Length: 227
Image (tube, rainbow, N blue to C red):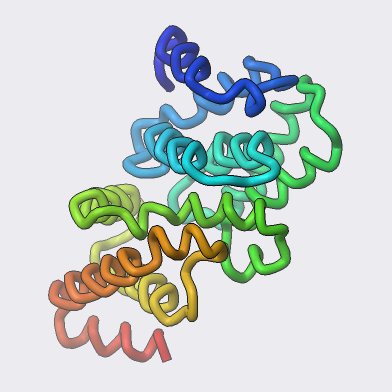
């Protein structure tokens, strides 16, 4: 959670169309949820980075995409499978005091829920809703130093409080390999042009790094799991 003055200054930098008819208290409620110290990556810095990406991309429903970004990790407990559902419910409750059309609220919830499995869930979304998912994964296509910080932060969210390094490596490798095997990581043509090549390079780099940290037994288990 950032201080109220800094939060207001950040809001003032946003296009007015993104916050019109939105209760500022709802946004502050979301901001407060990101302040847990255990969030090494899924914190307010991630939200701000996603919002900065949105500033540079065109879409028809920027307010909905913005709000989905703000609320998508409002509830985040490392390793839990219901984070997205609980975040969507939190957004629904927090935004109830805002005068937003029901269709837009439904779109916000769809985007948040789809972040659980971007490509499996995102295929059914509208292009502007898919943009939100692309923005959420924009970090994969960041510069190598920024990606390295992201990878380290993801590790720190899991280890040692949730799982062991070995189990984390196996699960992370499965995610990375599946992502790298997809025909395209990003839905949109613009986001693909911006991030796809860098993302593939970063994923391949992290795979090599993690495999290099594995022993023979762990490598064997990882190979069996990924069959």
